[in-house]
Image 1: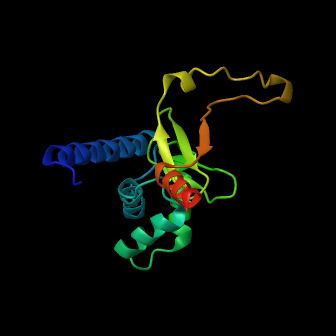
Image 2: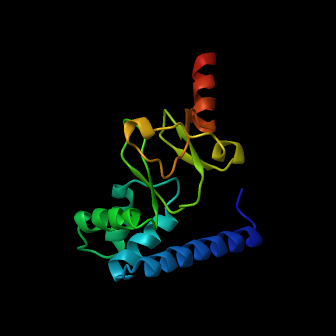
Image 3: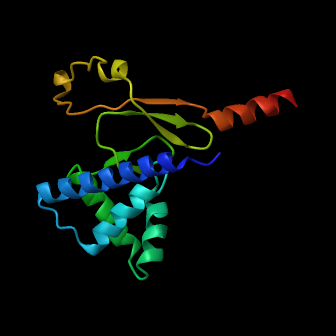
Length: 162
C-alpha cells in the first residue's frame, strides 16, 4: 500500500524538520556544516532502519564520488560526539546510526538485525541503579528489547508449521 499524498507530505515535513534540527544543533556546537557533513546528514536521514556506516557511505559515495570511507566514518563519529546524532550498538552487530537524539528505545530483531524505534514513558521512568560504588556517573540510558520482528516471527512460524 502506497502512502497517501498527505502522508507523503507529512513524511517530507518530518524529514525537513529533522534536517533543520540537526543543522541547528551543529551550529549550536560550533560544528561547521561542510558539504561532506551535509551529504552524510542527508544520507542518514534518507536511509531507513538505523543504517550502518557502510550503508551511509554507499549513499554518500554515489553523491560525492571520491569521498573516502574514512571521511564518512569520521564525520559520523564527530556528529555522535557532539550529540547531533545517536549511535546504537548491540552485541554481534556493527554500530548503527540514529538521526533521533530524543529519549527513545529500540526493538532489535535477533534474526535480521532490524532496529525499530519505540517510545514509551514507562521505559523512560525505569529507575537507574546506583552506580556510584563503581565510580560511574550515568548520563543517559536507552533500553533495547531483543526478539523477532514481525517478518522474522512470521517466517519462523511458517518454518515450524512445515
